[in-house]
Length: 422
Image (cartoon, rainbow, N blue to C red; front, side):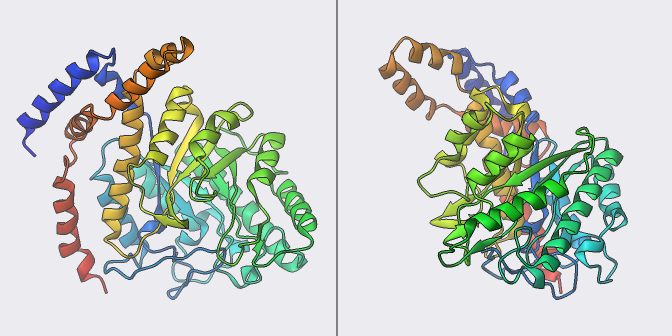
């Protein structure tokens, strides 16, 4: 897009927002502080690098589509992420699952992984000025085939998964130490029942005991922040998920852990944005996995919709940007995977920018004075304000493609790189 036109549009937008008492320059500076953790599994459909023929399975996780260009090696995955980073403004983070270790074509069982399997990721992150977040991989494994891991009544299986998560926490803490940047370590397990169970209580008791053992070793918070992630249901666990919202909310509050809220993990009529101000009353920090569920937890590419906007608004309105960690979590193999990445990141950034451009103090004053018509009218008028021109200017200042220009960049990358992968 034309630089002069972008700057002219921004000048007009700046003036319009100034009339509402909003400083667009300040909003851009606030947006720069929102670092989004890019989920490495979008580039390869959650395959990982344990084995050349690794297959996704368990916990209701399902990737659809077979668009050309899937990353098949660590080098290709990093190449794709670097391309994504070149197309979005600001500094971001990278989110790794344990199955993405640099195993050098050797089979390393999950209860045997060590920091050396992720050292090349640390070196790469340093080179690209990135923070790293980390996750144990408690799915796509024979010991998860019966639907239970940390809550399993099979003691052999349970001990295996406990050791895996212990090692993941140790690895995450070491990553944080080497990068001098705290790693959010998030535990999600697929445990649940397809049909109505009789003994929910025992499974949840076992899960609590497993977590207590896992967290018995404490690491400095400047290197590691622990999070637990809840879910309503999954394919194969329609009737009961052991790690429900109530279970993990109680555990997180009691044990001062981060609670991870994935907006695809709740009933379609629930608003995750509405939960944020409640959870922040009791926890210092939370983690958000930003996704887009369509009828179920289908992990569609994030778009700038009402749900994502409410999430951003509630964080900003609560003055909690520094207390909330933002990570993307979706996987779409039916379209260009790099395009899916970039579209999702930009959508999340747009939501936060929109929230930063809101005259919150004015709206709160109207609310307190019972001027509800005026509040409603102003909220509606804000929808027509040129926040897109402010985002375009942010992209221009960040030396990344503006507007639709990123589409052409991704198509070029597809032609030159993705379609040539074997």
